Image 1 (cartoon, rainbow, N blue to C red):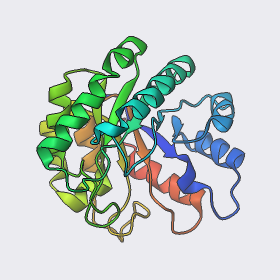
Image 2: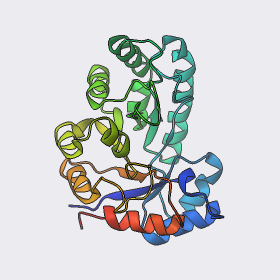
Image 3: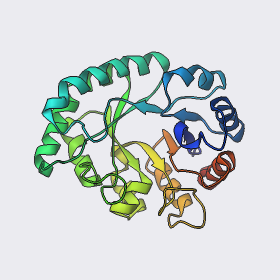
Length: 255
């Protein structure tokens, strides 16, 4: 069994005076395999350190997403352009968003997301790039966001029926909405194309002050057959490099 390939969500760790170059170099020294969710101006610096870019955001915007037909032309154009760009640079995944409900029923929002994703699935398959709709909590951080439950997101993926349309399973967000993380990964892991971490409550370090015990969660991810990246998306309490070093240790399973 190969170890979890860990990734750094770039913007969360640019603090306390840490420069972009220092963050990238520190991540490589710690043993990270990827930096993700960063603007194109930094891509070359990541590749120069021998790191991958696991994923980038595929379209604007988070609250105004695929669940509204009026957005489909715009989002299709943005996703198609970013699919081409990702394929050219070896970036495996793009993040997509359902958008906020704004009165839409679960069925209508689901059907609209399916329609929007069907417009780009052929291009994603041809390019070998996975479009991952992100699961987010609507209780604390993203009120009214529609893709806030695993079951709803899986229904979207089943309907699109493409190996290149999956979910971004954010462990922090789903701990808030559902809990039962390990059982969910065991039963639904085939639908997850990327993972994010953070401590709950507070969306901070993966330390003993938060409630998620990450090692067995990582074991479940490996057990599911997942071979992609797990990105750390928490806000460090103190030194960002120290927090990344600890997160890497906590999640370094499978060796």
